[in-house]
Length: 262
Image (cartoon, rainbow, N blue to C red; front, side, top):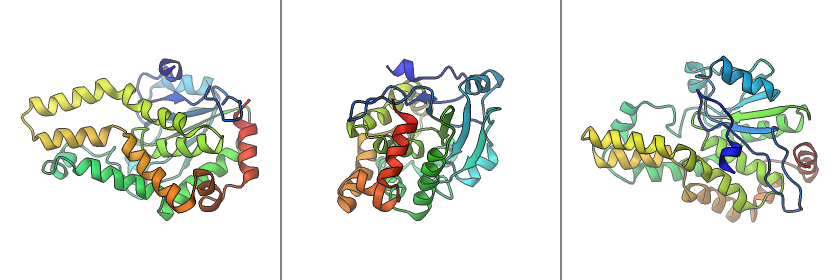
């Protein structure tokens, strides 16, 4: 199933389709309508043609202004670009250089893990993130029903992962299915992660740096469950969170299901 989800993008990371997931009421998310991914700045013409052939009409960018300014999206010919920064700066460290991460994360081997728990808390509690995800849903609700929507950040795992969790929940997909989709990133990035951490160790760098790099470059059940526990504690359920915090009405959810499920 993982390979079926991956798009044939050669110069980008983590491009995958959310189609095929079952909802709790027996419907199925339409294929080639919702695409999640990492950065678009390295795509070549062949990659862009893949996205154009899918009729991608919206390119929704969760990155911070500093990230999108330095590495602007290469936008498919069919698409309109929208900047929806979840944070004003890259809290996830996905756009930071190896030197920056080494300088910050070479002492305490648990620092990267704890940092990511904080990032996930902030994605479900801060006004900036709230505004971003509200705009995300507004654009989805007003989208062309015959088009595809692509949403992304830098690595396509944290800000994008949270967006996918919220969207799948609004589409009435079971939480465990949503979490399993979130965790697919580790399967897709496994070789890259092993290569990076092996090089760090081979260069004689601090073990804490290697462990923290792994924590920053991967996803974890602990990360997403930290966010979901906060949601459940404050709102009772993710549906209540969507209703009360993000102001997505029951009718909005029905409209999303009409647009994206069959």
